[in-house]
Length: 143
Image (cartoon, rainbow, N blue to C red; front, top):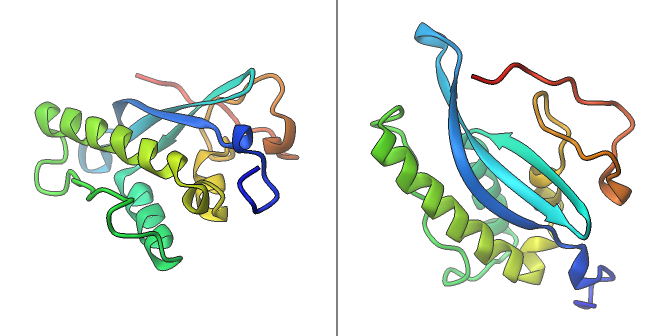
């Protein structure tokens, strides 16, 4: 137990596994793929860079030490450059490792929302335990 009532094994492991480009023309955007594992449940969530940045701001405001959370390289200027996006995936993976290793960050409500498969397109496992939501998430077409 980490002292806040949640067992350490209740924190999912989170791997930044890649990215996908969605939409067309002016409506084109990038989502990053995060693979989450918690006990026997596995699921994937798709988050935009802005959502990672918002999580970062939230965790910094709750007093996460500066040395706990690495800086985030965001793909602003070269949004669709494959090399830049691959760098972001590696950095997001290191970031998630730091977040999940810190009990105050991993137990934060905004982190729990970030990894919960509740957004349109997120892939939910058959059984989610305490992460289950009441409304199913509709799948989207990938590719």
